Length: 479
Image (cartoon, rainbow, N blue to C red; front, side, top):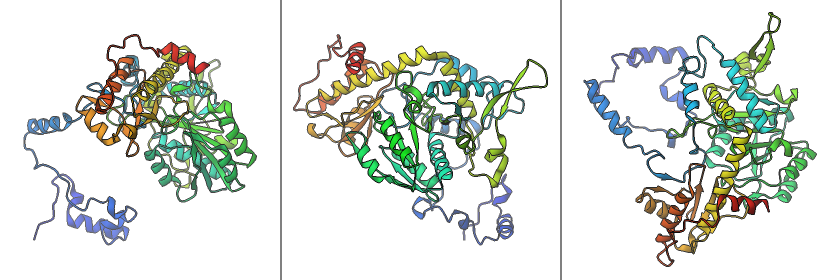
């Protein structure tokens, strides 16, 4: 009989300790704690770990070997997106968030506060200006949570259950949101037309039991919703709110959702000065108008400017703290959990450095590079664009006409040091470009795909005049 493992430094692994703890909570076994976890998600076997290392240098060598298996987007040409993006992070961002008064072990909560509230107030102010909103929260865990919270706010305010989803949503995000709201909200999906919302179909589904219409723009496939005003008017006529999930990176050039009727705008700040880091540094934002009905439903913290007892001096601190889950604890409307305050400071530094002009120029580059990539790839015989919508940063291509599969294309191009995108179907590929993607990078991708189709001629590598330059693309889109 195998003896139970007792860790030398964790006394709770001893059978006697386990039995006492189970008796104290009235459980027969540890398995009862995991009753809500589906059986197919449980490991049901010991972890695949090596034998313990007795020497530190052996452990370091082993861990170095594991880390060496990672390949970053600095080491190969990447067109991967789908929620975590390769944007440039200015050196000053890392310098500021590495300072001891900001860099902490947990949730941005230092034991001594040296300007953190002010830095986050400034982040909120910059985000509010970018989004044309009045109130922005201190970042939550990620954009997935922020979206789920935004929809929950709509449900609580209206007392209704139905949420109409009017655009394509990133599958991972949809999974997280569905898990978060499944007890109190019902998600219903309205089919899209050519990449964007079917407004007529949406209107036919609206009723007095709809809490919110949820639109993602850019969508999972990078499509920019062009009919937000019509969607907002229809939602409001039914007594519902419009919740827009978005990425703030494009609002130097795009019209903010708030100016098109959105009531709640939410999303992730990873694009604003946060590294990819093999999965990304993520932080969620929720933005609303200066309306107490909405503000008091926000469970996360807000930092504001306040007067002090000293004339002429100001301080920074919590606004309406007693509405938060931090104050109400188990009695709160919703539990926020771990915040991402440090990433809010990073995004604040990024926005302050870029300024309105920098964000405008970045948005123009993203639109132009996206359109250039679309034109270049669609010129390959047998390759077609997934839809005709305007796209920012991401778009899909259909490679069925070239006799290719998305998975096969990815496998083949990885051998050339290229990550061409994310398969979103058997023959559809989601391609992402950012300001880090040059026209020559796009040309290299197009050449590599063209070579896979043996029935088509190679694209001309020597095309150095880039017939569809950034300027020409922007002029085309303006027209």
